[in-house]
Image 1 (cartoon, rainbow, N blue to C red):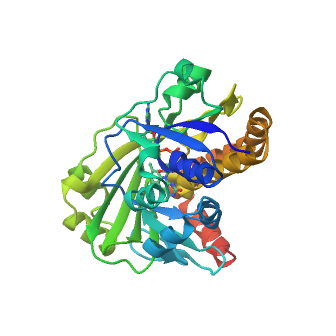
Image 2 (image 1 turned 45 degrees about the vertical axis):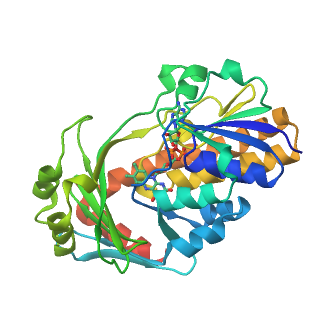
Image 3 (image 1 turned 180 degrees about the vertical axis):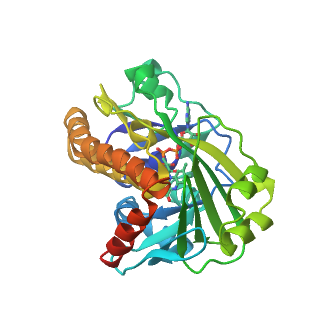
Length: 339
Ligand SMILES: Cc1cc2nc3c(=O)[nH]c(=O)nc-3n(C[C@H](O)[C@H](O)[C@H](O)COP(=O)(O)OP(=O)(O)OC[C@H]3O[C@@H](n4cnc5c(N)ncnc54)[C@H](O)[C@@H]3O)c2cc1C
């Protein structure tokens, strides 16, 4: 079945559903408020479900070519000693930067599908479209309009920094200390990607000086990054989580990705789930009439993504625990042997 779709937001979820629908003969228009594709952004982990979604959208091989395959990860203490290691052929992930991922998604479609520098129009003006996909991210104006301000994501209790430096990282590490964590991952283009998060009140200030003071006595891989990094490549954001929405659908509008279920990044699943939403919705729309497809999309995706919002929050609290650290490390060390 083919029809026409308006997609509000040309980020990860929006461009994935656009690719999927276009491959199945749909007429698609994407409204994206940014003037063009992003040129900066850090690496995202694409888990197997996300790779399967990218394959269904026709762009998986592009990500495999550009991304870096990761099989190994280690959880460390601030002094560099190992809490646990994961070395698995089953749980592989491709690491790819946001600009590279969006570039692959854009290359998969005709150039005129995405209207850059065009904010989403009012829903009332989109009556000619069979379906509207709200993929406008954590601060979704579409969600606010349809469900009201009480369903806005709330502060997750943690603030995060991301950046990159030239160099190479052999594998993924995440270092857990009281109240904070610091991650290092490979990234395409001869770069090392890093991220940090600490428990703190919302809107706390935190420049490079803060980061150097907070993590400056952690192990030497972290110290090296903090010495090299410049202030122009430090992205700082508070982390937000969605409350449970009563539905991901209203009329002919479907919410996908962070618009529906913003989650803390501790499981590295937000972008992955946006892509799984996108191809689940795309597949249903190509097989069924719109009302039936949207109802099934909501039933298929709301529960699992709610569980992930809760699980990501829990993992963030465990990784930045301030008490019971010895016990936590023993449990994680034991668990990682079976991962
Ligand atoms: C520190 C950190 C690390 C992360 N690491 C990972 C990871 O390793 N793996 C992973 O899977 N996820 C990760 N995530 C999560 C991931 O970045 C998000 O979940 C993902 O980007 C959500 O995709 P989306 O398409 O829903 O929203 P976005 O990618 O945010 O796209 C929304 C788009 O809508 C546009 N838009 C907004 N409003 C309007 C409007 N009114 N009109 C038109 N356009 C509009 C925006 O400009 C944007 O392009 C991480 C997040 C953070 C904060």
